[in-house]
Amino acid sequence: MAKLTLTTFLTLDGVMQAPGGPNEDPSGNFQHGGWLVPHFDPDMGAIMLDIFSRASAFLLGRGTYDIFSAHWPKITDPNDLVATKLNLLPKFVPSSTQSNFDWTNTNHVAEVPKDIEPIKSQFEGELQVHGSYGLAQTLIEHNLIDEYRLFIVPVALGTGKRLFNSFSTPVGFELMGARSMRNGVTYNVYRPTQEFHTGSFEIESDPAKLGR
Image (tube, rainbow, N blue to C red; front, top):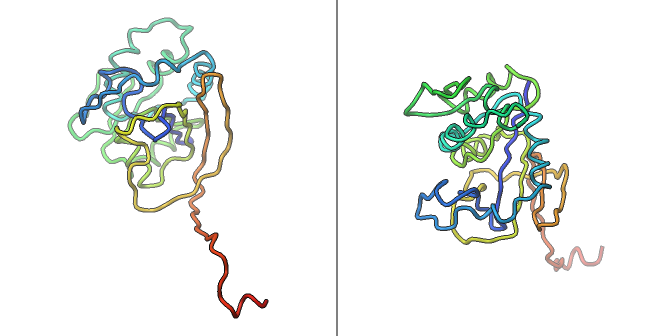
């Protein structure tokens, strides 16, 4: 059974929209596309290579799929790990408007909550999600992500699509690993624990309890 992982870039205020360029996702009149680019460096590149090396298949939102399919098939260097993985491995794309896709080894997903476990059961290793804002919201809502890999970039935008936008049930996370880079980016790996607790720093004022 494959592990479902989500890898994405985030600003300090949680925005994941259009990290790679102004035309990537300008929806909602988003004016800050490309905010990641000045911070991307070889350290981040090495981590991304390691992540892609673990992929057995990909689950991609329709918008991310369209971006990837317009770029990666043009990269034919067999030594390019990312291109080789994306071009050759199975890709699964949820869509309500399209069921056939031109990119090699792309498969349609009809119902995300229902179809994820059968897809995971086909593979060992990792079923990887990259970016894919809309898909991520559905996966979060249904507690389907096994591991989050978050690159947190030292900028705050104040607007844009956020990874944790809104969901019905609070959830806790366990930090599995963290790394700080020279460019100010931090890379954090989390696994959901499905536990969430609250507490209080309020000073105890019940006279019956103060004498204990």
